[in-house]
Length: 387
Image (cartoon, rainbow, N blue to C red; front, side, top):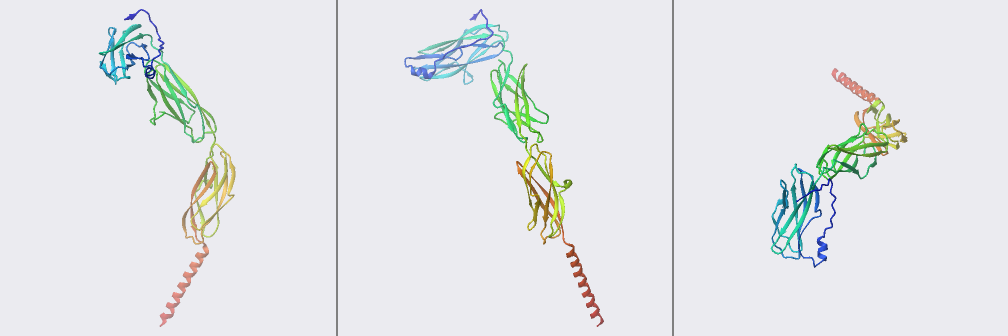
């Protein structure tokens, strides 16, 4: 039955008697149809659903027929159980059966309020429930964003992850587009808070929200400081944004090489050879307490002058001498030696190819031995040849 008045927005209040409260009142007995919202707003051309309960208080179980009366012309109304249309239900004693009322309002329905009546009829009891459906104006599209922790702190190698929630406050489902404004060189990506699949938009049902996450990766060479990132959500003329902050602390980054970037040197077996090493801090914070060490082949020795450096500020470099002594038994050839630089919060290493040459004295001795052997051979031939 149509009433003559029209309301664009409906506010609903209802105090429902719960099953626990009924159990505390043993005098309650009968069959009841209940809902939390017996009066609601709907949009023309859009389906509307309402959750119901068929409650049995103190009666033996019986088949209860279900129907909807006073449905306006052109409208469709159906009672669903577990998502399927049903025309009867059977609640157990002191128990209930959950139901859903689905209403399809035609697109040409005018504004106003209509009353539908739900009936539940059993052999020994019956119940009715009037439902007011108000057709009004559409709610304007509206989005909102909330974040749990808008400011995070880390180093340039930190992957900053912010959890935020996007709420669709309109009366229509929307596909929400996500965009992040970050400083140049920063990488951003969106995922659902419980997933790993990257996304650029996400559907959100009317009146619902989604828990999302934006991940921000700063460049390795970024300087220490505070950096903003703004997250934007937009859909169907609605937009919302939130500002995030990254507090990036500096981090040292060491590199080690020979003079001019060389990673090779020559040495003589049994003799100390000085190799110049260049250590550089390419990070954004001072490198503190840097110590040097090496991993040469067995029976080799290595010492450093100096063996440590108190600090290197960003973009500063220093030269260190590595005194490498191959074993006096080392054969001529190429060997690998690793030099290490370890500081607080940063470390690096470099592999050097060391070419070992034997002493010239041994070469002279070898030549002399060969010459003597030849002289002996020539003398023997000359002596025995006369006979």
